[in-house]
Image (tube, rainbow, N blue to C red; front, side, top):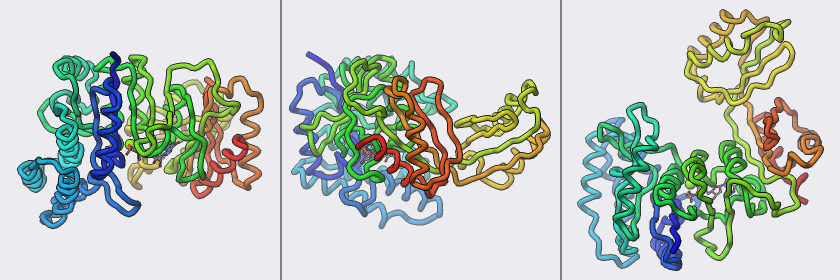
Length: 440
Ligand code: ADP
Ligand code: ASP
Ligand code: MG
């Protein structure tokens, strides 16, 4: 007997029809003991995710408005699922309690988390599985960081008491008992945490695409699926915008050596993508494994003659960032220039920007220091790049041929990835140009 932990995303649990598919998948394999569920996602393009509606309720309360009418839509989503499934299950008490709690300012995270909570109650009932509230098994520390040790200890002990169970994704509890969520898309992290605590052989992550694709299907038409990818490659891709799996979902399972299989709820026969720790056999002739990109970066450009001989220059610049609670993304440098790439969100606001520039001026007396916005970064990732000569040249040639200006280049020392900075408005064309160059 094996042990599989399965996580279903929002679109996989958006309505009764999808609940039935999920039940079929779960019941098709007796190893699928523990199920992590998301809140109901979009049923069609213009639809609104329940999580977004809950955030909106919180906003309305903050503005002093009444949520009764708006909350009706949330009630309707759940009641429709229950009715369409033909379940004899009354959650009106739960729904009223939550409405009341949100109205009495129970907090943003509490509001957002109820999407997963309610959906998991319904799914547990439908599957005939136990319900384990994430609130009693997923812990955060005082400073808001996820508490790996405590969670693993309590959760593994709890899982041992159950043959089969549904656990809501996305949230856990703070030491003072209040609910805290992971960042958006965080049910993927819960799935990974449960897989580790259950000592699973496999973590199946069921979504609405047939695995991790070589590029974002909303940007590149019909990208090829990736059969096998390493944790490190996927971490690079997801960090850079391949939103198919939360960028932090890798850690708990990687630690325990549990592979992740990304699968499609709407096409269960498709093998999807296997995410593993290392892979010696290459499953394709392609040099690159995948590409991804995201907008919203800024560059702090610093110039100073003889910078290269000034010991401690870089450290003093990074001290300024640290003092302002900013982490940096990349640090490309020349002999007399240093560029620090940061997310634009982390240096938002005139006052903060002024403070950073003034401190850098004071600490290192540069010839010039300026902040430039509007940068997009894209990552070309592949374990095959180490062996293939001329990959970088092909990337740059493809981008240049598309008449796109390259603003920055950074290659990791592991030769697993090449990072290229382009203007935000060029991102999609650049990704398409690279894809075409490598996938013929
Ligand atoms: P879920 O609700 O199941 O967690 P998400 O919407 O979070 O699903 O993630 C799946 C989506 O990720 C896909 O529908 C697709 O639009 C997007 N996506 C972005 N990049 C990629 C990629 N490289 N491969 C697959 N999907 C991607
Ligand atoms: N429902 C949450 C979100 O929309 C978490 C998740 O789906 O993973 O972000
Ligand atoms: Mg997701």
